[in-house]
Length: 273
Length: 318
Image 1 (cartoon, chains in turn cyan, yellow):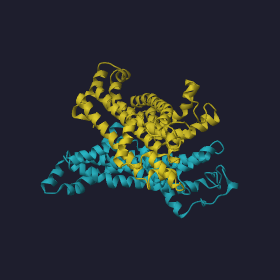
Image 2 (cartoon, chains in turn orange, blue):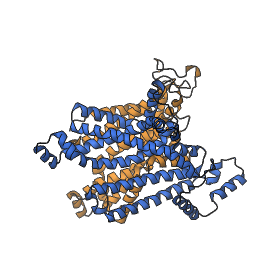
Image 3 (cartoon, rainbow over the protein chains, first blue to last red):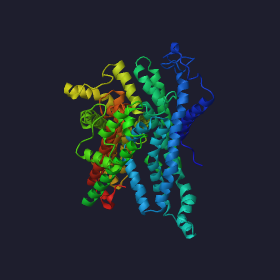
Image 4 (tube, rainbow over the protein chains, first blue to last red):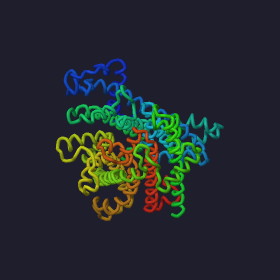
């Protein structure tokens, strides 16, 4: 067993902290986030409120913990959509390489790639109404071609290997080979890509909720906390700084984890780094 | 080359057709119909009927799609319901903010990323490389709108070097215009520059490992000379593709950044369209942005093939 790279540990630890904070928020938060205490508003960080309070006197740490749920849930489900739909498409395309359906799937992928995803996400949420659900949908759609392409790319090279040929000679069908032999061998690629899409999902959700197209009040979300802090930034910079740091640290943790996983799972890539 | 060009042109046309169909479909599947959506729940039936007639909603789906697309071809984007002026006019005015902003950011991103990437590659494994890789890792993780807010906090509120937002218009002069776009462009450029610097670095490292570079070094060239004379030109090919693709990220990113800085660009127009439920504006601006992105991708493909003849064979850059 090779030693796990340091950045993988660091990334996993940072990610774990945010996931744990999100989970803990279901059971306990330092202060209730639905109470408004105007007397307590815009307080800088103190011993009582570690990250200070916002314009309604709510505890920012508690808001961030509850907000982490939305960010993580949206990103996880969006990655799930990408994997559930993209991986079978990629496996199918690789198994029927060169067939019209392969062409169709890959050209369809190119088309979605050519779309500016943020613009389409805005269009979707604008038309169907802003909500966390529609944000998931808008982000998830653009994960499908990513996973289809990664799966197909990995699978194509596997289909030329001897053991796959042996499986074909043994009479296994394409579907069975795809599931039994190809899928387990592209799993590494999918885990790495999943981490990357997860971090992109966190950023996309933050962007959408920043412009008011993500989770709606009273559900706190990191992006909306930033949007609401914008006019107060000169009075109380801390209310803009902490939600931003939460986003940056989560994304950074996931990216480090993704890079570390890639190095660990595919040592050939290390040459370039 | 001619065949390659025609193939790419074909896929450009196909992309545009599909994009227009998708955008049209999204607007069509609105619960109820676009007219009642735009007017809200309390609208009088006569008003809704009048808007339906104005938008041509009484025609068939095909007729409406064709008239919309036909209009786009001749620059007729329809009439904004809230502003009561042609959408083309609204777009025209705002394009002069969004496009310069995008190009400014693209320029900054390229000017920062290429030297930084080259330094990291040349000093691979050294402290400069580690520092640059760490900084770019951070740059990728920062949401551009948050970075924009921090820039406002430091350079507009504390130091007062720039205004916190707004745009004086180009008629106020070139310098005030550029000054107003500087913080937004920096905010947009940072994450893209981080990505680009990483691409530049790995591309140059790969090129430096090639035999012809070893030959050049054996001939007596210093590493710096080998990079400048031989490696850089080849290493720039993948970087160029990414620069092309970044145009679309920057243009889309500008939508959000314009809202941070209250810039009267296409992004603001889209969001005003969304809050006022002015679907004519939203539909056309989205189509325009998609068109710009697809067109730039096409141009990059063509430029890429012109530089690197290996790609012309086989008909695609894949």
